[in-house]
Amino acid sequence: MGSQWGQDKTYFRAKHEGYRSRAAYKLMEIQEKFAVIRPDDNIVDLGAAPGSWLQVERTLTDARIIGIDLNPIAELDGIDTIEGDINDPAVVEQVKSTLGVVNIVLCDAAPKLSGHRSYDQARIIALNEQALAFACKVLKPGGNFVVKSFQGTDFPELYAACKNNFYAVKTCMTKFTRKGSTELYIVAKNFIGPAIL
Ligand SMILES: C[S@@+](CC[C@H](N)C(=O)[O-])C[C@H]1O[C@@H](n2cnc3c(N)ncnc32)[C@H](O)[C@@H]1O
Image (cartoon, rainbow, N blue to C red; front, side, top):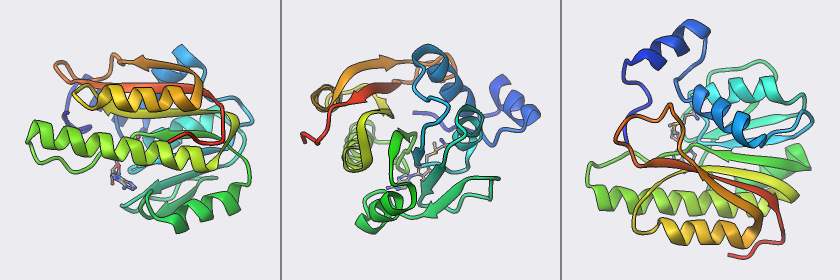
């Protein structure tokens, strides 16, 4: 469960290419493999700071994008941001009233880690479930959801919950994830709606 900011080759590539973090390349790879985002999709990005996914999203859709994070997100042209918690019902309402239709929910959020593996794993899965609940509240049927998770004891339940709500669900380990990490993304396409949680 490493930091996004260790100074490896991808870190320097991101700096050179003007991305705010190396995480940008993970979203590019997911998009290349799964075509999650279409050119007219409205997107909500959960846990979006510092904003490299937002930068990639801007190149993939001409529609609206909202980034949400507990931390402030430095301004990006043509992107709305909310400084807030994805669990706050007021944030959900703000997204609905701003976008109307939401086609895509992406979540690269991660809690602050304690270093205790099983405790951290439980907190990550809890955050993943909150992201899924958020997606189910705002997505239109047919919409897509991507969430970063980690393999571990509670992962199968999360995966099953995604399968209950989307017609097509897969996992993806990107080549930009650090060696030895258990990080993986769930790519859930075609929201059935309404939510089954
Ligand atoms: C790995 S960073 C995301 C990197 C981002 N995708 C990018 O490309 O720049 C994880 C973020 O999740 C945010 N986060 C964690 N829990 C959150 C919550 N409950 N609500 C909103 N953001 C949250 C953290 O503040 C942190 O900025």
